[in-house]
Structure formats: structure tokens, C-alpha cells
Image 1 (cartoon, rainbow, N blue to C red):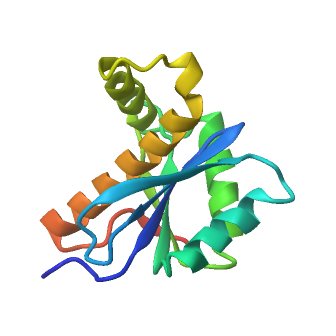
Image 2: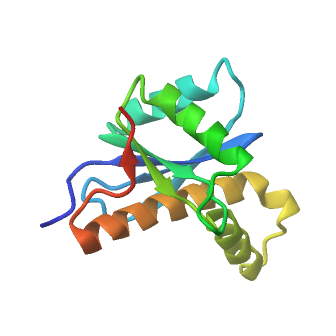
Length: 149
């Protein structure tokens, strides 16, 4: 079964910033979009605006779990943020273990300074989260992660 058609947003929720990525309509390739400042009054609204702008069928939110698969303090924060987004668009929660570490490593190998590239790292982590979800769906013919009601 082929991957479901339609663009998706990938979201990496952090305490200070939220990385955002989008995929093409065929669900083949995730690319960075922007980094949104974490601010209660505007962050959800901005991501919903981006979902509208890209006509996204769903928002894929990375769920930060520990290496053992247990919840962390960041897990509750990501779930709460995803629930706010779910009031506007369908949301899927997907395991994001090591996405930020992978993004940092890739930028470091490309010669980028981690400290000066934090906003780019957040976008790169969102790309990794979304691409992993797309690849999973393509390989298994099943939508990734869990859907929020």
C-alpha cells in the first residue's frame, strides 16, 4: 500500500524553540521550514498558520522518550503542546529519540558551530522526525505513531 498522499508538518517541541519541517505532497522528502519561538500566545497559532499555508493533512509531533522508552519531563510538555495543536489539525505523536543528537552531529560534521546553530538544529530535528515518520509509513504501509483524539 502506498503512503497516504498529502503534505505533513513535522514539529520538534523544545522549551525555548520549536523546529518545523514540511514534506512534499507525495510524502517523499522532508525539508526545513522555520524555527518558532516558544511563546504561549503565539507558538500554536504560528504552527497552525504554517499547516494552513502548506495545506498539511496532519502534524507529526516528536515525542521525546528516554532511551529505555519511558516518559521524561519533556514528554509531558510535548504531549500538552500536541494536544493544543490537535484542537486545530490532526496530530500524530512519533518517537523522536536521538533526533536532536542526530541533527547536532550532522551540522557539526558539516562544519557548523552547535551554539550558533540552535535554530537550525531545531529545524533539522523536525526534518529527522518527519522523515523518519514518512519512511516508517512507506516501509510498513501503516501510519506512524499514535493519533491524538
